Image 1 (tube, rainbow, N blue to C red):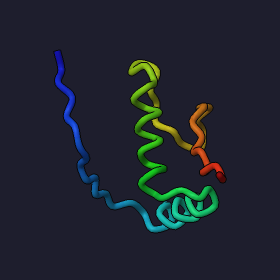
Image 2: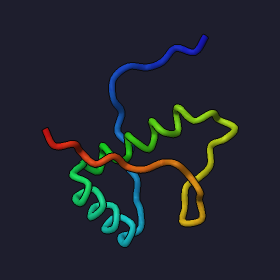
Image 3: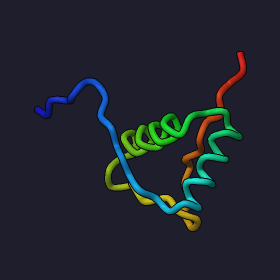
Image 4: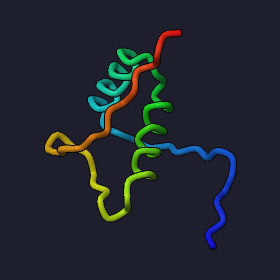
Length: 72
């Protein structure tokens, strides 16, 4: 049985500046932080059966969408 680790870990990555700028604007438009967007994507991958996982790009026909924050 695999034991799951609790807590949080940092993920430091270097990405192209144009992608960073696009992602930052998308997160602002949706009212989420960049961290929340990345966590949503990883949660989506986690719940997707491993054989059906694919890298999302402009050609993907995937059902993943970032959720905008809901106003209270």
